[in-house]
Image (cartoon, rainbow, N blue to C red):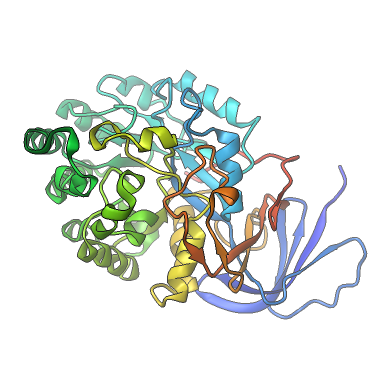
Length: 449
């Protein structure tokens, strides 16, 4: 095999709390050297990538996506959505188990990995799913090559609800790896749904979604998950938090590597508020629901003070026809991987987050939380998963440049000041200013556990 040598030259490198001008040398799939001052290298063996005026960050690691493959591929599939992901600067993703069939056995999970190995442009991992009756399969999960176990403690797309208390006790006490949870209290949601349907019928407005899937429902469930984790010493990761009240459940007084309970926020909960439902309707209908401006501000504050550790997408595409149905018949979720990093960079331009904080929450911390092997940082000997950014290249999201298979985005019409210039996965330049190179596919993530 020919040795591939590249130098990303003259970039502003954002890594481990610093921004500095330098070069990154890539040899095959690894970062070979990082120089804080420009290298005088005229060796013709190296491809020189001129990054003057550009910023270089580790590739984003998205710990929560729904790529709909297998079984629901009219919405999206591993090839199309991983393609959109790398165009958005995401080099690794972790996909949820509510596909068809649900990933509830080790055999089904392995089949999904085998399938992805032939399609995914980005690096990948898949959660093992939990149900009310598959504990014997859950405990077989290999900590070294599976990202985690997913429990739906509130029903969502795919209806993998786990609501049996004995089952929850069994999973929390016996899980061999990190347990990731979707937290919404099912009984509260059912009660609210009945009440609002009786009041409004099929004509209900989407803006009432956060009243049905309420703050109370979120807190009741997330507090239960945290209580179970503390009782059993479980390594718990709470997904897509949405409320100010939930922040009291999480700690920021110990190093991340020592935390047993960690938390995630998603782009749409940081970008939108309940004031956007009148304009966006079902296109911002997610579970858990987008809530108030004060809840959004609490999430942003919690990211700054490290009660929330990770920013992810919860990318969950549905067809345009499905999203245009009346509220009760329209599924929850939307596509986000292509536009997550540009949205965060827009928040940088608006003074909400620093570049260092964005990299910490989207690149470094997922690597630390999941113990991912040699990814998430720009370090010698680490995999060359890298994203090159142009912070002064405005572009508007239009149907013509949306890459999701579903063909729409809640960000449509938004102009972003920044653009993803290039994305490297395992040293391969898989995306370059709108041009894809998918000759070499991504790799299955491995974990130091």
